[in-house]
Image (cartoon, rainbow, N blue to C red; front, side):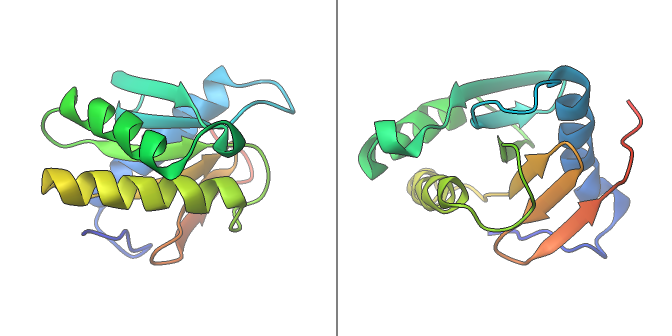
Length: 135
């Protein structure tokens, strides 16, 4: 399963950067619910609320499997949330579900956590941050 590397080529880093730009442009509140997205950031994507306390692992896997089934071709799976780019509970539970859903579908997973200031791949610890995201 592909993990992002901060030193990766421009093509592999294009989608996570687009996710940050889209998130910074659309989310202006200080506090907001985390969302799980699958698709092409800013072009065509599916998103659902990512409240880990309201779901169990099986339901999260089913949700991601349905989102994956509706997505064809190259895409990105990402979680948008407020806060710093460190491991939060919501990151771990949704990454676990994404790994299971993508493994069941036999597809490669590219997963990042996105905030208004950057992105982070919790599997490889690759990250990019910006002081000011130009939209």
